Image (tube, rainbow, N blue to C red; front, side, top):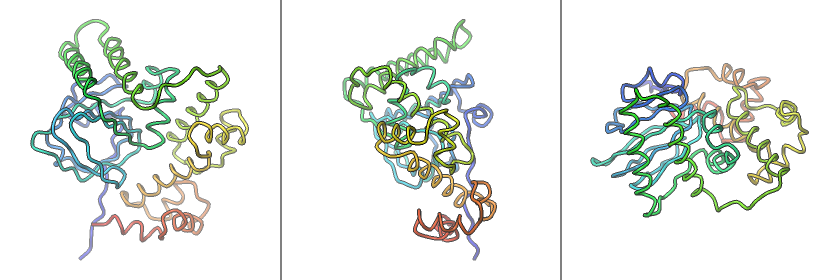
Length: 297
């Protein structure tokens, strides 16, 4: 009997407002879902936005980029864009708060501290933070305040007020991601800014497998300097970042679309299907066809 491949729905922040009736707040850059109690009925989807999930009660288990993850009461899940969510299993008492954010609003709200988010979240794509007991009440207050503002959306300056609350919450989240930073010279801060720019550019490019020289040229810096910055602020060179994001695109298109191998090869910028096959075998240990079949159920 022929098996069917799971085709994912892509969900982007810009059209989230029209794809769910559970949205409690939306302003184009921020979407808030107060609770989802029936995730087991939600089809697998490809999330193309940043999101934060606070588990306020119970627990949830699901796959994110094909890896199992458990989120328990008092934990916060931070996720960069372009992740696949599937296979939900929730406890009967599960309750959560979901905050979806655009890259632009995170950059605007965090400003010079955006590197903390990038290094912690983009590096791993997902990051789970266990809230200390003393912080759980504080974050409950944040969400109660957010909920109040959502219920009074007709007030003047509502967008600015909502962004201010979320900005404060993001700063508190970032303070728990890494150890406090020491004061750095301006030149070092400029270097972090360039590294963050590279990550954002890489994440947003449709064809990610481009030479380091191409990214460096677009940023008006040398390839050597770009790789040096990547190693300094993330521990791995620019080429490794490019390979990581390229692999995720390959896995997504092979496992969750009906495009042919040749079409995927062209779409992702490979010169020919033979080189694409070699690339997949090198990075996944199997041919494109076997990788595709591994996702068939």
